[in-house]
Image 1 (cartoon, rainbow, N blue to C red):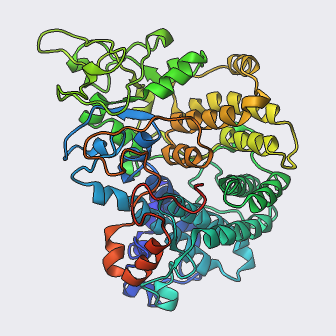
Image 2 (image 1 turned 135 degrees about the vertical axis):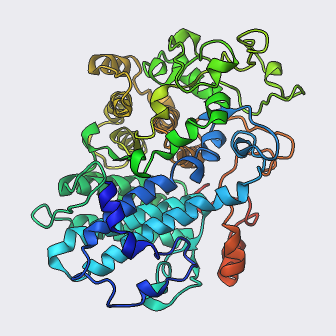
Image 3 (image 1 turned 180 degrees about the vertical axis):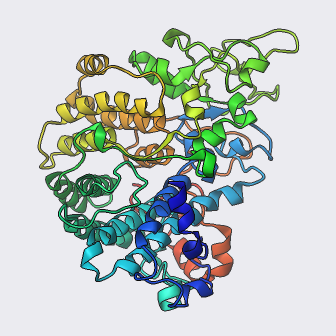
Length: 533
C-alpha cells in the first residue's frame, strides 16, 4: 500500500483537510493533473487509509466514543490527561484538537474521492472506479454527520471546481436523503464486467462483486439509522439493500490492513502501545460482565489480567492471564487520586497487585490483549456480523427481509467471533462459535435488546467505537449508567455528539451559526443529531 500512497502525494498534498480550507495552485492549474496525465486509481488507497485513520485512535474515537459507550474505561484524571474526555466527559488539555480530527480527516478522505470522481467523470472505461468513489465519499460524509450533525454537503469539496470556500451546512435529514439516493445509484451501477480498480488497499483488492455487496451493506446500515426519525425511508432502503445483495460471509468484511513501517499504522494500536494507555486503559465493567455472564468464548481472546505489579502493568509485552474466570472490567468514572472517586472506593474493588514500590491499584482489572497493540492490525470498516445484526433487527421490525431474525442473529454471533482472527491472535473454531450461537438463541420478547447489545459488544471488540456509540444512540441498548464526574462537559449525561471544530466559527461563521441554530441545546456535547430520537 505504501508505494501507492506515496505516488499520490504530488497531486493530493494540497487537497483540503477541512471543508473551509482553500486549495492551492496545484488544484487550480489544469496542466498539473488530469485523467490523461495522472491515474486516478492512485487516489483510492489514500482515501481508504484516510477514512479508517480518521475513525480510529487519537483522531477521536478511542479518546471519546470508546469511553462514552463504555467499551473502554480509564483511571486517567486531571486537566492534561487526554483520556478524561472518555469515560469521565471532562475536558483535557487537547480536547479542542481531538474533537476536530475526525472532521478534518474524513473531509480529506471525501476530497480524495471527489477528485477521483472528477478525473473519471464521463469515462466509461473507469465507471466502476467512479462509482466506488461515490460510495466511499458517502461513507466518509456519513461518518461526519453522525458524529457532528448538520454538515457542509451540497457545497462541500468544491473549492477547486466552484471556488466555494465557505460552504453552507445541509440539514442532516437532507444529507441522509441524498446519501441514500446516491448510494443506491452508485451501487447499482457497479458492473462486474467493467473496469477493475488497480490500487485497492481495502480487503476487496478491486473485486467488484465484493464492492457491490459493500455498497448495499452500507445502505442497510444508513437506513437502519433512521428507524426512529423516518421509519418509512428506513424500511424502503433496508429492503432495497437486502434485495440488492449484502454481505453473505465474513469473507466480505471490509477493512484496511495497516502498514506501520511506512507510516500508515493502525491508530488504535498506536494508542494502546503508549505508556499511559498500556497502564490505565482497561476494558469496561459492562463489556466484561456481558461477555462473562454469557460464557462468551471471545473473553479469553480479547482480555487479560496483567501479571502482578506496576512494572508488568506498564509493559506492553508482559502476557497476563487470559483465564475467563479471572477477568474483571474497570468501572467508569474512577481515578487514582485518593479521594471519593479513587478506584479503591469502587464497589467490589478487587484490591491491588504487587508489593512495596511495585504495587498497582488497578492490576486486577482486564486490559486488551497484545493483539490490539499490533500497529499492523486491520482497521475494520464494516463486517458481516454487523450486517447480520442489522438484518435481524429489520426482520424483527417486520421489514420484508429474506430469512428469519433468529437465523440472522445466529449468523452474527458466529461471524463476530470468527472475524477476530484477522487480528492475528488465537482463533475461535467454527464448532465453538456455532455451539455458542445455538445456546444463545434470539428471544422474540427481548429481540431488540439482544440484537443491539450484541452489536455494541461486537463493534467494540473490533475497535469500531464510533459504530458502537452511534448504534447505542439509535437503539438505546445496552442500558448504560452515565458518569457524573466533577467538571464534566455534558451535565453528567453520556455525550451524544461532538461540537464542531472551533475553526468553523471563525472561517465559516455564517454557515456555522445556521447549523447550531438547528441544534436543540446548541453546539454542545449533549445536543442530539436529527436521527437520534
